Length: 243
Image (tube, rainbow, N blue to C red; front, side):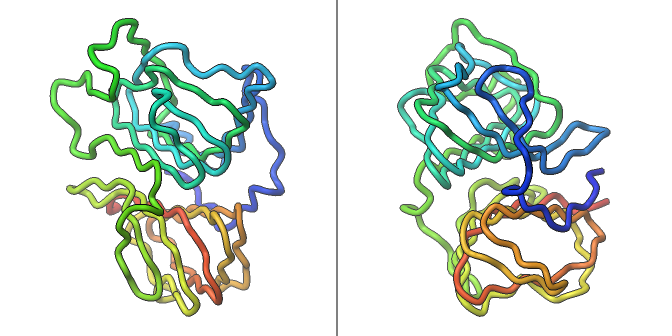
């Protein structure tokens, strides 16, 4: 299980160089047993970064939210800030990947990421090589701001991807003044993960979460209430119920 990360200001973290040129990363949280992790990644094509040169798939989930710049897996659908994609395990993608400028993105994977290349894909849009389609299907949202958002208590919510069986998924939340995350001290029934894209939030423990701040709360952790005096945009991910 991942350890809780109550507060992390990613702006204050140094970039690590995992190896290939033009690729930088900040590890935000990780499960040491499974390899499941969340990271903030930075790609610099001017330093020689090249995206995968052929279609491929992974044996785990891959989830991306763009923070800065633009990128594409097919050179047709372009992902820009607050764009999102979710690839279930064994989803073939990356037919003509392109990163024309410096780009940052949040990456969530379910275990250590493997690459399985497909030299002759059967089509040039995402498809599954598994025997049956996954319950949580592939999702692309190039422009969430232009789609329909659901009004909730002093906020608007856009569901990015959701597992209909477990309720695990990711959303974008745009809060208004007076928004609150819930009752302080409640035990969380599942993990909750948060990254602030813009604006700021006040926490009941006195901490302030501004742009680029992150948290990961494990199941059973007592909730710390978040409130918003103005407006903020937050990337939230919630896990399946704890057993």
